[in-house]
Figure (cartoon, rainbow, N blue to C red):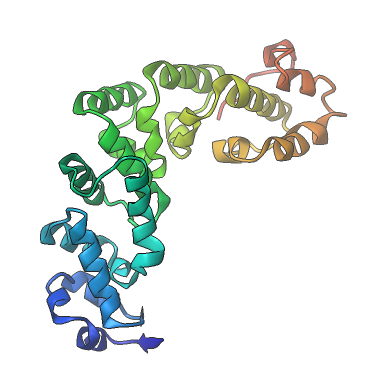
Length: 267
């Protein structure tokens, strides 16, 4: 493997027909480049063009993600594009090509799984459905910019129903006291089961916070992203002696409001 520390050397080995696509900003940012063969960048270019990307789109994504031109197309890009084909997408499908272009323009990294999910959401959805979800999230207090940041973290949130979104917000904001900004940092919450995961876990943590046993700024991801076993060990079993009824709260047999721990502490 060759190791380049200067942009000028990067220029010297990159195929000439690929040089037009590398913006000066990307080149100036490329202080240390790992590059195997000139053919590798050629393969990336061919692969992207073969899936409907124009020179303009490729130029834009390379400016956002310079490392893309150094990606191994067989190990990173091609498997994702093959996934699309396996679930019914076609390279010749005009809507598929537009979906890929849209996701690229949104700044998604094609090397990440979120890119695949975003393309799927855009491809399967309609403009009216997208705008409806945007309006629902706006009603929750988020700006379009914040909603797009949430979408980039969890593309499937744009497939959640209005009822699921609003029910989740009602519980998290009105019952648990979470601020919209804190919820936005873990948008995956709108993909989880409210009854089986979010309500039981957040109710337990609410009790622990009211009791002063866990810190106030505990994030939603720390509460909801872990496995059931880890959550039980970390937040229920650990405090069973301090709060004997905690397991009943977790199982939904007792509402946290039935436990008198003084004033409500909001996060």
